[in-house]
Every structure is written in structure tokens, then in C-alpha cells.
Image 1 (cartoon, rainbow, N blue to C red):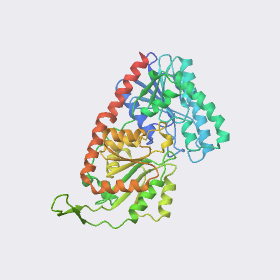
Image 2 (image 1 turned 90 degrees about the vertical axis):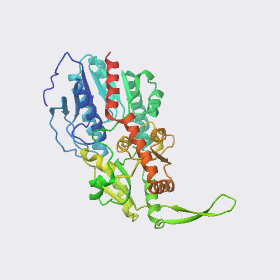
Image 3 (image 1 turned 60 degrees about the vertical axis):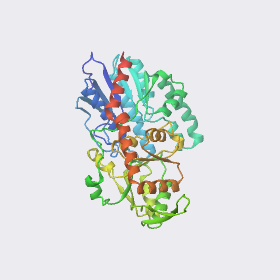
Image 4 (image 1 turned 135 degrees about the vertical axis):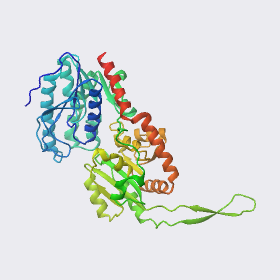
Amino acid sequence: MCALSPYRENVVKLIFVNRYFFPDHSATSQLLSDLAFALAAAGQTVTVITSRQSYDDAKASLAPLEIVKGVRIVRIWTTRFGRSNLVGRAIDYLTFYLSAAWTMYRLARSGDVIVAKTDPPMLSVIAAPIARMRGAKLINWLQDLFPEVAQAIGVGTPSVTAPVFRLMKSMRDGSLKAASANVVLGDLMAKRVEALGVAPEHIRIISNWADGRLVSPLEPSHNPLRRDWELTDKFVVGYSGNLGRAHEYTTLLEAIEELEKGPVAKPSNIERPCNNEAHSSAITSIPATPSIVWLFIGGGALYDAFQREAKARGLTSVVFKPYQPRDRLSQSLSAADVHLVSLRPDLEGLIVPSKFHGITAVGRPTLFIGDPDGEIAQLVKRYDCGLTVPQGDGSALAAAIRDLARDPERRARLGANARRAFEAAFDKPIAVTSWQRLLADVTR
């Protein structure tokens, strides 16, 4: 193991802890990488404690110690069973906890700030006592609330896991209360954390973000991916990112099936009676629905099952593509005319889908599938940048897509609203400024 002697002893260090970091492409890694590099560029002394693996490759062996863009990256030893096996994943978690705890203890000094993310879950539980012992401040950066998420998605047998989860909640709640601050992603998550007994002044809402310098709107006619993927002259419904246990795909399948089985769209004229004394008739033109393609880019726990089910149902309008490099996000996200975001209603306040921010960055409307009163639904309504349909209502989703496909002016208006929302609330510099203010408050 590399020597970990601290550097710049008399300077307050920020020590981030998360299982994945640059050059990994996973969502938590990209967010942490954005923030760590931005803070280092602004003059902060930043260390990241992370693993030597990548999200999609447990066998990857990244350098144990390096400095990238002013950030000191300490990659610790862990087992490498990967994400496919629950027992192996648990062992990977355990070895990360042990290595991270020892590394935090060695690196942290009085006055430093430890920022614990939530991959693996419950990092706050090991970070809190180490911060206390070393005289450091603790900030918990909550991307989700565990073990509530595990309970909601049905991990384990309830009779076995219930007492374990109660113990985990008790330990987790204590670590949240002990922190100088807990960063949450939205209003509903803030309410959840406050309900756990955390003082409101120790809760800070800082939304996730996209980087407006890397991700920006691209017109279909100027997008080489639409040509390469043979999407020219199609109406493209996109889903980009993780399709995991926090989502469901039955609503999607029902909507795809309904749209594929519908009548072939042709321009039609319908006579509608005018509301006047002569009872004359007027001819109203109803625009045709363009050919609809569903574009799924990414992966996740349910991705393969969804792909198999789509094939089993004989659905022909669905296209699957792998995760795209970050430098092609403008092209891949702009390849869609509208984007889907979903979240199971029972997970509201526990998770906030981060794909929403990239969608707003490329100026596309969002079709949210889930709780009409949920976090994303509220944002969609507040900024008038899309539509919400209930989970389980495939016909409503099909109707919404059909309507948007026929109405380019409405799509353009919703997309422009989305980009304005991004520039006002979800661009990276806004989040970095919020983090800088929080760090100033914590170290004051």
C-alpha cells in the first residue's frame, strides 16, 4: 500500500469518500469528480478516498495513488467480487469500509472536513466516529437514504432483515445527527431527514447538476448520432442512464405496445361544426403522428430484463445502446425529442433521479412516470418543462407521447423552458457555489 503521509499539514483539507471516482463514468463518480476538481481549481486542498475499481469492471486496477487536476486520489484495496452477486457485493462493501476507515483515520486532522457520500451505503456510520476522534468536521452527502431504499425494493426476507434494518437505521440516524451538515437533493428528502430527528439547520438542499460546458442543446439536423443510429425523420423517445430497481418498466412496455399496435397514422381532415347561427362546417387539419422510436441508452439491474421482455413481445420500435462517453453526452441526450424519467412512488424522498438535470441541459421536455406529487413531478410543473403520468398507466404515457409527437411547437416551448430551468438552477457552477458556501459555514 502506498504511503499516505498528509500534505500541507497546516491547511484545512477536504476529504471525500466514495467507492468510485474519476475516470469512472457512474453518476456518483461524475458528480464527485466535477465537485472535487472545481474546488481544487478554486484553491481548496482536496483528497478523495476511493476504490481501485470502476463501476462496470470490478477487475479494473487503477493506480493506488495519483494527483489529477490538483486532487489527491487515494485508491484503497478492496475485494473485487463485483455487483452481480449480493454476497460478493457485501464483501466488497465490508472491505471498502475497513480500508476507508483506516485511511480516513490516517489522513484526517483537526479542522479538516470529511465528506461521506452514500456508495457504499452507510458510509456516514464509519465516518462519524473517525471525524470525532480526529477533530474533523463531517458532511454527509446523501444521494439516497439507506436502508429505507433496500426495504422498499424488497432486499432480503422481511422476517430476517427487519431487525437488521432497525439497527442500521439507528446507527445511521446517529451519524446524521452528529454531522455538521447533511446535504440532500430536494425538498422531499429534506423532510425525510428532518423526520429522523436531524435539526433543520444541519440539513442543506443542494441539487445534483449537469455541466453546461459539456452538455448543451443540439438540433437534430446537426446531430451525427441521429444519422449514425438511423433516427433521421423519427420521433425519438429517450431513456438515458440507469434502469434499476428504483424504476419499473411495465408502464413503458404497455405504452410501446399500444403505440405499435395503433392505426397507421395518416394526415386526416375531420369536419367539426362551427358554433354559429348558420351551423356551417369548417375543416380542421389533424397532424399525423410521425414514426416513433424508443431509444434506451445505459444499463442497470433491470435493463437486460426489459430488453428481453421487449424482444419477447415482438416490439420493433425499441433501440438499445450502451452508455456513451461523457464527451458525447450532448449528442446522445440530444438524440431524443423527449426524455423519460421514472421513479417508483414508494421511493419518493429516498432518491432523486439525476438524469433529469442532463435532460434540462439539452433543452428537451421530460416525461416523468411516477407520483404526481413527487420531487421530479414538482420540478416539471414548477418550470413547465414536461409532463407527468402515473406509474402503471401505459395508455396515458402513449397518449402523452402521441400528443407531443404531433405538436412540435409545444415541444419547442417545453424544451426552451427546460433549458432556462437548467441555467437558473441546475448548472454545475451553481452547485459548486452552494458547496463553497456550505464549506465556509462549516469551517467558520
